[in-house]
Image 1 (cartoon, rainbow, N blue to C red):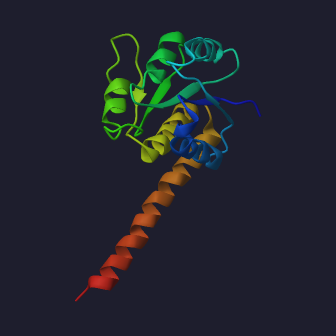
Image 2 (cartoon, rainbow, N blue to C red):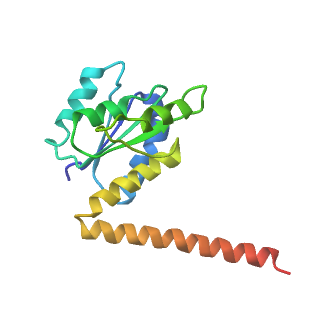
Length: 167
C-alpha cells in the first residue's frame, strides 16, 4: 500500500520520539513513510518534501523537531495538507522551546500541535488516524475499538485499585 501519512523529523536523534508515531500508525494498519528533513540544515529538502507530499498520495504529515522546531511550520507553509507538529524535548529547556515554536504559528499557517515528547508522537498518529477516518469507515471502526480498549484498561485498573484498598 502507498503511504498516506508522512512522518518527518529534523534529525535522527528525534527518532526515539517519532518512532512512537510510526508504531501507532502500524497498529492502525496505516501506511506511512518516514524521513529526515531539517528546516535549518536542509531547507530545500524540507520544502521539496512538503511541496510534493500530496502528489505522492499523502493525506497528512506529522513533523517532529526539537530546539527552534521550525519543521512543522515550514512544512505547513509549503502544503495544503494537515500538518501535525510534535515538539521534541531535545534541548536544555526540556521541549518548552520546541512547544512554543511549534504552536505559535502566524495566522494562515496552521499546525495542529501535540504535547512534548513520546505521548505527543503517539497522539499525533492517533490524530492523523482520526483525520483519515473521516473518509475510511474501516479505520473509524479500528479507532472505535482502540477507544474501547482504553476504557477497558481503566475499568480493569480501577477494579484492581478498589480490590487492593477496600476496607
